[in-house]
Length: 118
Image (cartoon, rainbow, N blue to C red; front, side, top):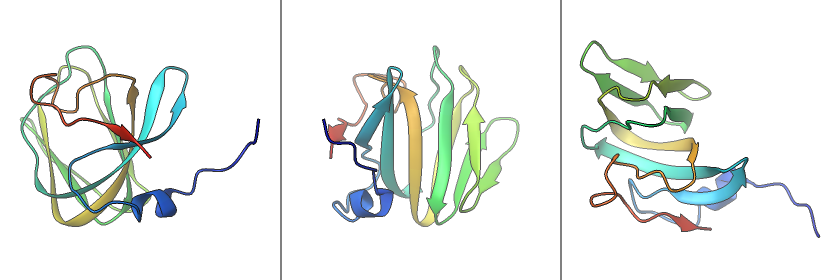
């Protein structure tokens, strides 16, 4: 078995679509993903899991009913499970996401983006 580091910048350079997470690895039953975002996502919540966001580049605002959190490069935030939120990026923003494998990004399998491995 060959052990190789994952270069997130290289992975991000392989695609241009927004709001479509790409799996770059796994960790203890969790997907490690990169995603490019721009504009407003949908209001949603995850009833069974927290939602982890780390900004690699750009700026992300996570709207929540009781106040917003804005993140810049190198910052992360965890939305607690069950909390309704809406990620928004005014400029293209690159994120690292970590969530249990199979978690739908909208909280609903019917409306979730298909995750692909790159």
